[in-house]
Image (cartoon, rainbow, N blue to C red):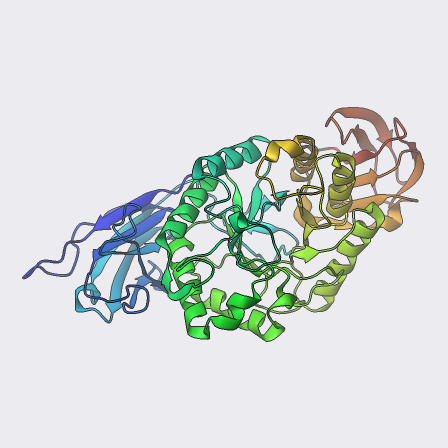
Length: 509
């Protein structure tokens, strides 16, 4: 997935008209980028207001904020302001700008949105609510890394090391990486792990001044992830950020949110997360307000969530401002994980807004705990949930050496391949069909069974299902073994070995 970018460089000179006559072409779900110049300001982040209204071929208006970008080429000083927009409707678009600066105000133009095979942005679909979807309709089965949270910290690793880590994860079959923008508290690691998006450092952050060095770093990471079809799970506040939350004003905080969405909201591969373990420093009203702000600011409506302290429930069940969970649940026990996902699914459904149930942190998983990770992810998936693996060292500092968890990613890639081969959007957990273990049942006579421990079990296939094909899947290798046919009714199975196994039952396809 590669984002096509069209940049319009507009020079404002005395006597020149403000309308751009040439009609540019922008691929659907590509990026239209308006680049402007203005140097009449004391603080470009608080002293310049810039926005543009884009009008679709069908007449729909979409408001997008602009942002300051230094020299426009990665330098932190300059006079460049940009507006970015990703069109999803084919045909002729128009735009006009408004600003408190005359040079930036009243600009207008048009561009043509042409066809492309881009998947578009990731979003929540209430019609098929249990998994996020790309605009193309393709389901997103989340499978990736939750650590290191401080991935964006300047002193933690170099940008080259970040790219190498992203390359490794993508090559290993991961499609998501968790990372945070603010980590300034005393409780989460060494000074090398601190992250801040403001000028002034960690001790004296200037909440009125965005650090462009940080934003350039984040943009490089998002570009790399976009090239490799990976999603960034981007957290505004990591845990233990009370010193920041107690000091920043609502207006300063809103400026950070507005800037972040303005600069990165045209990227399709994003999930917004308000805060990690939000209860430490924020209340539910703050979460609702900030989630609503993201909904207002973000033209592509990327999914919004918030991470909470360990619980088998979602604090914001039923809220229209949240599009998925970000559950922390401190166990690796397969039965507990499976039951917790099913419980949360029931909770959000009963609250009137079913959303994807994502378990992103379920106790630290060390490099030596590959078996626990394997059984955990299968147990979550068979309950109709998705996961991130909290790939944290047993002891010591966080590590960006993702290869230390190579076996974990290999197991996750096997599971992801199995899940993506199923009609997931129409499947649901139904453990009543098996005498033990877990079962995911769906249309077209499709069933997936997982047994964390080997041995004998019974699977009940409802009446009406005719002769169905059966295959064993080895979760350790991905090897598939055909196991004949079965009929409706009670069917007795015995796993090929006494280890964990998966069983797929399908109708003729």
